[in-house]
Image 1 (tube, rainbow, N blue to C red):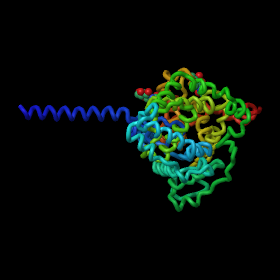
Image 2: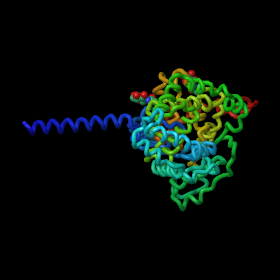
Image 3: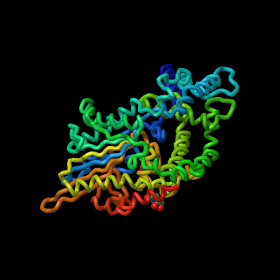
Image 4: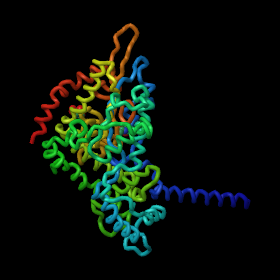
Length: 468
Ligand SMILES: *[C@@H]1O[C@H](CO)[C@@H](O)[C@H](O)[C@H]1NC(C)=O
Ligand SMILES: *[C@@H]1O[C@H](CO)[C@@H](O)[C@H](O)[C@H]1NC(C)=O
């Protein structure tokens, strides 16, 4: 009898402890139940095996498995965003100064006898208490590539080399390789680390780079488009949907939720929440395996809302929002055709690899010109809920080191002329693409036919549409 009582008592205690931990887990975000990197928009670190890839690619199949047996890779053309970097000088200054003020307020709100009382759990609060600004961070190093960015680009270079060993030969030869970066520290360092991944440390020192241009006509075409700058980029109308979303009840409720969680007796401003979110994003991107204490301030709904706020901005500034934005991206398409046609007409030509290192602004306009990740309905302030499974998700399509590659394949069947195919890779995975009718690989002529008229008139079209 008494042993049964003891057992019941023990069982009850075990169940109660279990419930306690479940409740604690569900409200304590010191170990979130979802991967934060999923929601960090354009400040997300590079992840090769992103779960979202599976919605757009051949599920779980590697490039090697998918290349048709009779085809051999002859050339590759890659454009990549620079890797994970430092914030802008403005954000660095805020992280070093303003953030410490908010930190003090949050700590005070969790002291016994605080006016309202914060709801952060003990591990969340002590992580925030222990947080100190990174003293290596200075405004003068704004936007520099960080170590995680170096690792990202080296990894990408090494994996491309491994997948296509016959185009990425290990001995550097300036006739085979064509690397280029924009006139920025982060793009230059990205190119150099990619080269290290391909060649190894010593050989990579031999790589020659052409002089970098600020407004490179292929790598950063929009820098030479005054009309786009004036009517899109610098036009307040472009940000109207983002502003409306910020004043929507979904967004305002989120701000109040965060204020309550932190126990502040005054409303948090959008700029403050943005700073907290930016710090969470950058600190996570810098050390993806660690957890920034600032991320614990947000729950999954908050992250989704803040991600959508940024997706809206990039949709209207750099994406499908305005035709002018992506129509100007014809130059890189022309560059692919030039390089590939050169090989087709002159199979002896030694050139094999083109790799460009550039910025988010180029990647998103290029993606939109290609017709990738195009939702049926535009992103607006009032359709966040309909767009829960949208394609335009910058955390996936514009994370640091995002890359798009086109591969030229020479295919030969016995007793027939060789033919050429083009394959598309996004974040290193085969991706179904509109010009291939939704396949990842198709005859080079498809690409040519699809884009020929755009490419033929690219120079004059850009001159006309970009004129102020
Ligand atoms: C994007 O999708 C919309 C709706 O399906 C379509 O009308 C538009 O032409 C597409 N844009 C591009 C650039 O492919
Ligand atoms: C990806 O596919 C899954 C399963 O079909 C779906 O639940 C999810 O919403 C999709 N995501 C996107 C971005 O399309």
